[in-house]
Amino acid sequence: MAVTIAYYISDYGYGHAARSIAVIRAMLRQASEHGLPLNLHLVSGRVLPFLEQSLRAQFEAGSCEGHRLQLRSMESGPGYALRQGTCQADVGLLRQAYIPYAGKMPRQIRKEAAWLGGAGIRLVVSDIVPEAFPAASKAGIPSVGISNFTWYTAYQDMLPAELLAPLAKAYLDMDHFIALPGAREPAWAAEPSIHAGFFSRQAGAAEAAELRKRLDPSGERKLVCLFPGRDTGKVDLLQSLPLLNDRRWLPIVSSTMELPEGLGPIVRIPAEATESQLYVAASDLVLTKPGWGTVAEAVAFGKPLVLLERPLFREDRCTMEALAGLHPHLAMSEDQLVRPDLGDRLLHGLEAAAFSVQPAAAGRPDEAGLIASRLLGWALMEAAQEEGTSVKAPFGEKIESQR
Image (cartoon, rainbow, N blue to C red):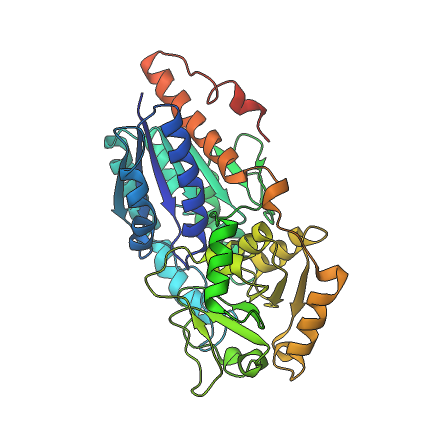
């Protein structure tokens, strides 16, 4: 019995794509172990090349014949709008982008419903594209949301309630919701939410140690990941960050980050590198905006966090609340981050017992694997109902005992 799933992924940044890759890799592994061909349709926008580069070889090398990876292009929502040169929200710019997007939603939903109805899809998964849910409902296909937020709640502090009505209406068509840490959502789905923990794409300890040795052969520096998103560009705050000229630290930045000339040694993650989590695993500290993907990588690999405060981002506040008592982190304003003694304060924090941390992966469940098993189980149950057959464990009975 083949498993056919449509997986919608928001393409604002790469965080949604990165965590979806972790779940998809787990699905592929489990499907192969049980001799189930996985037919996966990835639906997204500008992150589709990144998704394909990350997954194509594994689908082709799967131990089970019949795995298929198919790509479908669809423009996602506007995501966030940022003030030029900053990581802070630009509410006016967001409104300008959101209003035409919301106007196009009904047409996009009809388009996706028509495609889903003719593609043999057994389950629709969305992280966390709103159009996927009403489209699945119209096509008579069960749907699952996976996220730490919805765009409805993400925009609540930025846009008036009347503008958000189309998003609320779309998310109410969700059948299941897998809530990631930090989710503070209405009861969208008919079924109670399933709660998962932080998870990340994997990075082997030996591989991370080898990368660290290559980046800092002397072993004398502390490695710090600075906003390691792939599309960081120019951020005024980073232009004057004291760590860039502090020889005790070796900054790791994206290939696109624009920095002043004449700085000390800096590591740029190659543009062609897809497994950026390796750099987090090799680092001593992660300094970032509180995006869920990078935060989850720091938690998975036991790296202390310094998080930029962004008052208008409800998502950020919820993510930091989820970290309370779980993982060492400091929240800092932009003014605090440009103080000349930043390097000293962070070194002191690394030496302090309160800032020491062990990798969480060894003692935590395989959260991506648990989510993958849920998704495969739902897809197989739908296929079994249509074909009049039964679903065998672990994707039938056992699935109900997980989390």
